[in-house]
Image 1 (cartoon, rainbow, N blue to C red):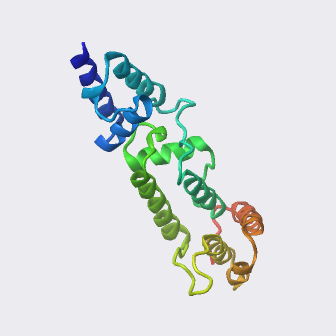
Image 2 (cartoon, rainbow, N blue to C red):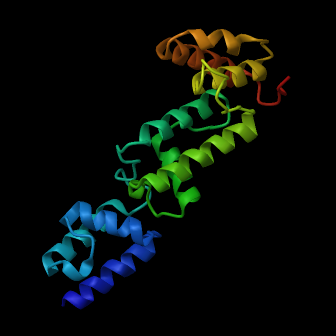
Length: 196
């Protein structure tokens, strides 16, 4: 019985596109044990139930989990929306994009730092390519100010010169408000209007 359950866990992980490290992270989260060989039949059933609960794309459970780094992913997705690159700001659209990028059957499986880092870097590359966002840090003492970089790209898209540097000196809350305001202007442009 246990052997069949172990095989089922491994088979389900393959169906979901989980790498071994991801599968072990789920097992540890559910049972406190990394290895199927150390689990009871009941624990193996709980792991399968968790995979079934979160592993179906399109269900309400298909959400990026609230783990370290998820806030950055959501912020980048919002930046993409405000740059006119992302056409659907919804969590469902974000999850669909994550599934395509990672090959996972559900965004709910994005738990580990390595996968989150891959998602973050893919989003940054997409925004750099499509909206010419320059993610490099500013020279010292300013350093890394991604909101200012998004505002610079928005200003380029709208043909507004030099506003990004002014934004280096406002706090994050005000910068977010500016990004939303400029995003509305970008999305209001006719779709055939070319960027300057």
